Length: 145
Image (tube, rainbow, N blue to C red; front, side, top):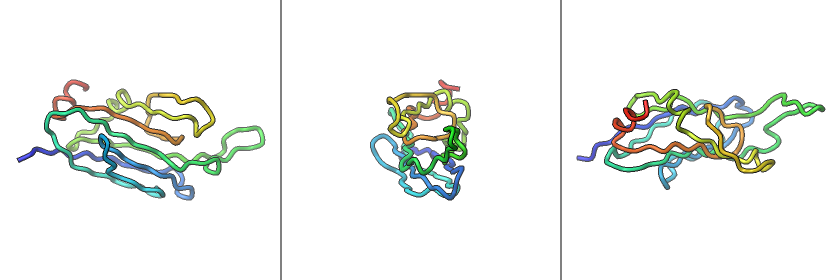
């Protein structure tokens, strides 16, 4: 019997009137695709816990200039963003470990060079949050806590 683990996370929006899109990829396989995230989504997925290297990717898509309202001086008045939180493997929340290990790659929606930053639970630009991990998951968790 193949051992499996459950991956789960909560995806939410800061503006239900301006939906954004989200894809979730495990390695090179798309496991979630929603073009209009307008309310909280609890996502769960089972994966094998056999020895291996893996990458989770969370791809925000569909953000345009209409999602950001600015005043005459260029100050942002309102900005649609997605929130990614409560990432868990077998009910063990990654918390701070996710912030330390995940990277957020984006180009300011085409207005700047491609940049890679730490990820702090909010996606404000079309781009990809990436988390690399290994299985068995409990060994990876112990090594990174």
